Image 1 (cartoon, rainbow, N blue to C red):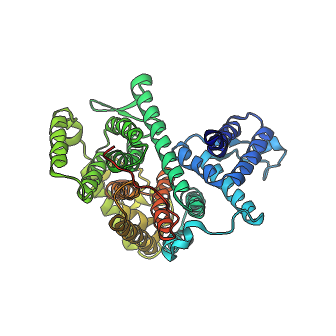
Image 2: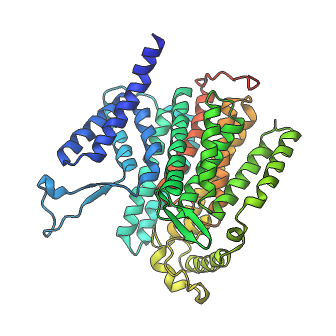
Image 3: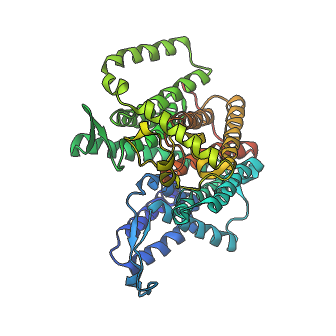
Amino acid sequence: MTGAKGWLKNTLPFSALGVTLAVYYLAPSLWLTGMAAALFIFLCWWRLEMGLSYVILTMPFYFFPKEMDPALWGIPGVAGRLETLRFSVAEFVVLACLAAWVLRRLTGVDRGWGAFSGGRKTWLPPLALLGAASLSLLASQYLWVSLREYRTVILEPLIFYFLAMVTIKGDRELQLYFDSVLLLGVGMAAITLYHYFVVGEVEVVGAAGRALAIYYSPNQLGLFLGRLVPLALVLALVGGASKRWLWVAVAGGLLLSLYVTYSRGAWLAVALAMIFSLWFWRRMPLLTWLVVAGGALIFLPFLPWERLAGGPSLWQRWYIWQAALSIIRDHPIMGIGLDNFLYYYPRYMLEAAWAEPNLSHPHNILLDFWTRLGVWGVGAIIWLQMAFWGTGWRLHSSLKEGKLQGMVLALMASMVSFLVHGFIDNSFFIIDLAYFFWLTFALIMGIEAAAGTGTMAVPQEDESK
């Protein structure tokens, strides 16, 4: 009976949501699309947290939006023109979940605020970022470009964060979201390795064929895997969870996927994230350190040293940073607006940087936030990091060793990778990276809120079993 109840409570709604979402995306008719969307909203009303799990599963697939032609609905265009509407799957799921949450509030299904009861740090720093982004619109020269990024990178990922926080009430929701990350890891590893070894879809740079998977750039794939790999590796090593061996398998596939991107920034970020994790894991004995060091030495001859040592990337970064600093000197308070760097950069580009004239970001997290959002954006990201690391440090120190501590350490490792890779490349202002950032932030705040209210009833497992 327990199995039947579990199927009805978990497997059935999750499967129904997945089938309905697939019908919405694949439906050739706009009317069928609309009916599938309405049914998806109803199912999210039934199980909102499961609806949100599909945001996690679809966040990397924004290159494959659902296209809808409003003319087929009989809606006339302005001056005879009406562009095809494009919505990523994650964007649709977020908006559907928001509509479902409003209905749940109106019908009295939801009364509390979930993990938002954890304190002001759960909403003040995110609100500061939203305020900085809203203020930056006043400085934008190309407002239509800024509004698009404001919607897809700022507002909708923040709605996802808000909804995730109101749904986290204990271990059940946290486990669901971590399980969704596990499924995301399975999917990303399978897609990357299939495209690389079977389809042979690569970008050839020198002697290396770099994996692309669903992205247009190996570096963009490396950026996303760089957030996911440290989390999976830590849960595989120190998670103490019942799904540990699944995390081991997923971490292996993701590591191979990361390797074939040949992204030096991603390799460096993940390496430093794991060094941080192993150092922070107080239980790690000397023997384990020796095994890790020995394993690293074994793999050294197999590393692509030509790729590691070659290329002008370091000098190019230096040229870009100098141009970005010049932009900041001219626009220190308000910045130049969201997604406007591409249009300003040619005016400030150094002559030595002629090889890459069309760049959309300054390849540095602080310079990126400053040029896009002004000094207020820099303050917001620093505040968010202070809130994250203060919470993570307290949780890791106060929680007993086991599942929860492993979750916290995994989230901290992912954030280390975010910071390290963000110092030399993009960090936040891509759709999937923005969603993953807020997922990481929501999970660590959710763990603290649930543990603080006594709803985190999680048995600590004996890892010697």
